[in-house]
Image 1: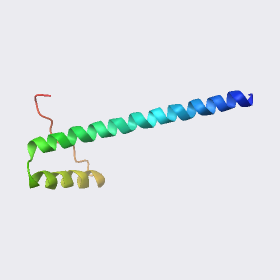
Image 2: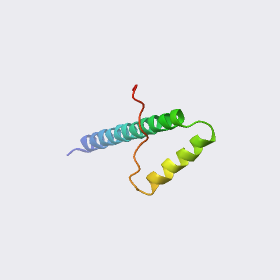
Image 3: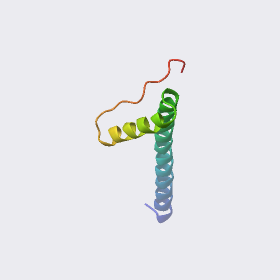
Length: 74
């Protein structure tokens, strides 16, 4: 393989890796926004922060705490 082709493949691989990471980050941000929006709709004021903390702590521990119920109008 020529050095020019090797450099091109390396650059292409890096570009694909960056796109893949951006895609994964976008999915995580979208899921987080959706879950937090549902929590905000269900709980207002100080209760929201308590439920948000409970949701994050439950997910960090790997307890399998599911996402909040989504509203039926979605």
